[in-house]
Amino acid sequence: MNWLMAFIYRLINICSKELLAVLKDPSSRVILVVPPLMQSLLFGYAASYDLTDAPYAVLDQSNSRHSRELIAAIDGTGVFHRIATLHSSDQIASVIGNGDALLVLQIPSDFDARLNQRQVSPIQMILDGRNSATANTAAGHIGAIVAGYNQQLDPDSGPLVRVESRAWFNENLQTRWIILPGMIAALSMIQTMMLTALSVAREREQGTFDQLLVTPHTPLEILISKAVPSILIGLVQSTLVLLVSLFWFQIPMAGSLITLYTGLLMFTVASVGIGLSISALSANMQQAMLYTFVLIMPLMLLSGLATPVENMPDLLQTATYINPLRFSIHLVREVYLEGAQLADVVPDLIPLIIIAVVTLPLAAWLFRHRLV
Image (tube, rainbow, N blue to C red; front, top):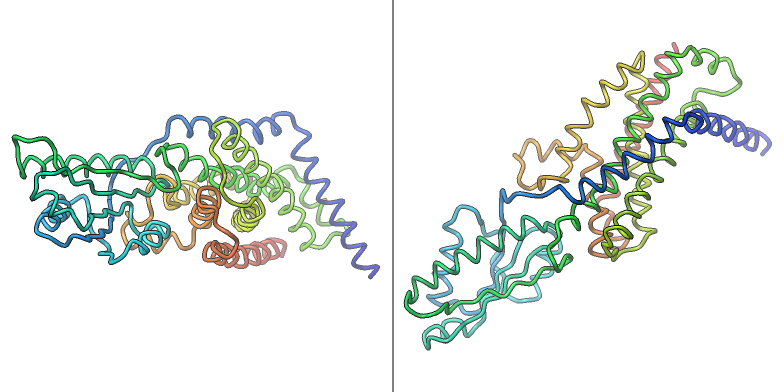
């Protein structure tokens, strides 16, 4: 028991030393706080999405000539591709909730009878509001298709088919509702990986690494001392972006903070594992910064933050499975916008745990290898 207390005591001391080394420099404190605040504001106001692919499902309760003609007009655009033909309204929740379809088109059973009597016939379009800008563009395309079909039915009369839209998870289809929850994970990853990658490299460059090795601390304790402060700082930065989203942009959070921070913790640990691996490989700070910048851009592009993963080529979709940011962004959006519970985000937690289990021992092995 005494050895455990001594181990914890030494660990607290060396972790405190690492935190003080980061926080004692005023410029470092500014870099840790200002960038996530500024970037979250910029992304919240300026970022937007373009429509590149529009998977949709249809619930045709009419199954008539007019409904088939309208569906054929949608399928023939090249923009929309049908991923499912539903048979009951109970299936809509799963198709939209799982992200399989951007929208569901529901055609009522009296659609054909109303059109034959030259009465206005409404059709319902249910949109996935988690991809708000793309959903808005898709709704505009559907409106144009319906307008063309109305002209085909009777160019002299008013529009007989009317689209009634409803968005789930983001009723007003505001772009920042999908951007900012993703930035809770993305912005913290940049700072966390950079800070972790520079930790050992900075010690080597300043000549203090050899002094650290002659202390009573074991290599494992030194490695943990490099990881813990970065994890804490990453969670603080995620909290800053979360507070901006909640109180500045007033985006309501539907899920649990416990579930959210469970996912953020696993993501930050996985990011720290990658950063420590980079740090162990780097001989100096220049190498660490270069390796980090080279790695961060692909991780951001393959995360699904700006472009849906489903729109990427199959090879790139496969590559995203080793990207912790992909799973963390999906997890945060599910918890923040949908109110997902812990059991619902297990498919995202498992890959994050696997990545952490792989990268942290890899960093430890590289760390020991550099000591030899």
